[in-house]
Length: 169
Image (tube, rainbow, N blue to C red; front, side):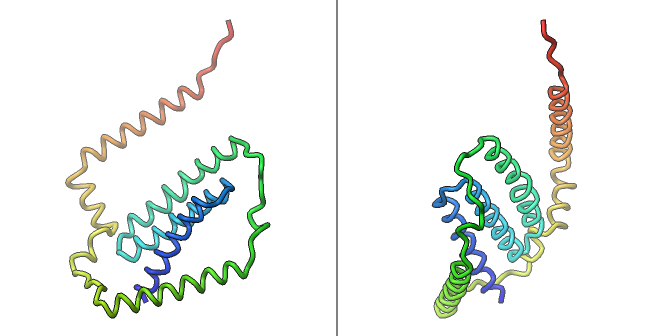
């Protein structure tokens, strides 16, 4: 089951990346990028890297995509299209069936060629929130605290610059 899910997420990531590049509408391209990031987070979850998956969703699919969409809206692109104007259910169903069939083919080839790897017991701990927290708060405590101070100073500086009123002479 995990292998099927991996192939589904991998094909979804590749298809959304291609759709992002090929699509002419910038808003749709940004939404395809969100789909790509979510599928990568799913792959991280399959690899037992929960921390990376959550960071992928929160930072990249959340904050950075909001920033991208904000910039796109500021550019005021003239040819606005509604997202679901050209959306057809049959294309979506055909895509899902194609992903399922391709996943079956890849799994069959990997099973026959003995390409499916065995996962070590040590790998189940790497990438978890506990493992990342253990390393961050022991080995890298000083760089973590310095980064926190630097980011706090940057936020205070940005607030001071934003609240600065220009006096007319």
